[in-house]
Amino acid sequence: MKETVLNVKGMVCNGCENRVKNALKNIDGVEEVSANHETGVVKVTSNEDVLKEKLEETIEDIGFEVVKD
Image (cartoon, rainbow, N blue to C red; front, side, top):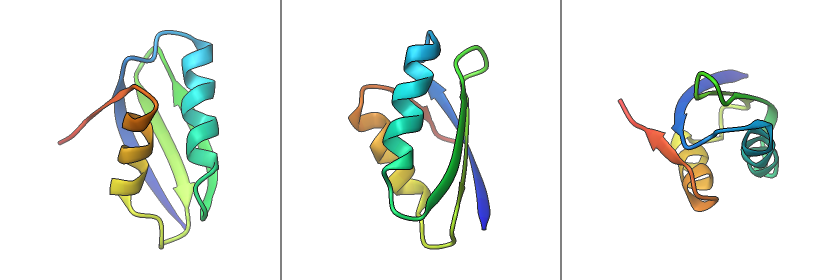
């Protein structure tokens, strides 16, 4: 298992957190997701096959911005 931490812009409420969590949980291999709209931090626990790019793309597809390093 691996943990990926993403910084996400645009989450302003619990509803936003839930949209992000639900979208990421639909990806095969994702086990657990936490999101905090106050800090903009999204943590994803997944198997090794899940690419960070896929997580970023999924978040951006639902209207949020991933702050890349």
